[in-house]
Length: 379
Image 1 (tube, rainbow, N blue to C red):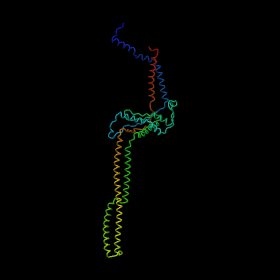
Image 2: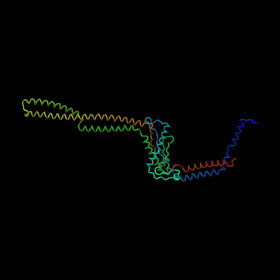
Image 3: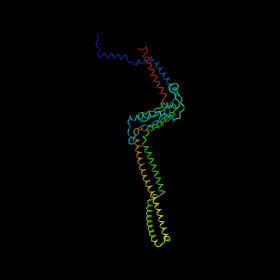
Image 4: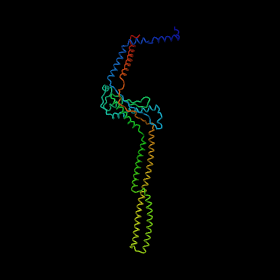
């Protein structure tokens, strides 16, 4: 025969009685501590002694830190715009990975005059490989360098911990310098502006060459006054041709009265020969002037073309440089401060010992709880 169901009030009272019976009172806690105080203190003492031994045997270490500012390149009219946080995080993480890359570490090792490594206990015990020379330092730098962004900023921190403060600073700076050189090769511009720069240099050299040729031509032929000289020679040639015509007419008239050997005929023939010689000189000089003027005109045309090409190439070069500067895919990194040898060691022995005491008490209480749970004295 089944019993009638209990009312809701009776069931709730039963759950409360069970909870009240299982509740730990302050008296129960004090009783537990009195029973297990020795075990708690023993475990805490062991932890504190161990921490003290570690502090006493561990050498002092120094942390050096260098800082760089990381941001994307932007056009001058966009420099005041804020960069989205997600995009900035991607940029800083990319720069941190580049800084931790193997080529950067290899360049840092090569830049420092490092001694032959002394292998520590981990290596002597077989827990770490015993590497020699640069391989050892390459592994040490890769494991010990800490490259991370400073919270709430776009600053990237390069920190290194070592027993020697000067060595710590030199390692941080060597890795920083190697990082700057490596990223220059990664983020180098497309080279379009350099192509235009080379063309501009060639055009400028051509201009200098043409101007030197023009100056040499002017100094040799007097081409600067060649036009005026040519006008004078043409006027003189016209006058000489008229005189030559008159002399020939005079000779024909005198030939009716005198023989060819007569002094008057010989004088007229001499004047005719002098005029012919002078006309020949004028023709030669006019030819030379014409050649010089044609050459000067050619140089002037080439010079104008070279100057126009130089200006066009310079304009294209400036446009290419502006496009490269405004390329949002590139990253601008500037040094904030280099690492300096730290004056004080990292960490505080007192703080470490205090944390050891707290951890020892927590571990002792946990051990005592386990002992209490498995003890036959538990009711």
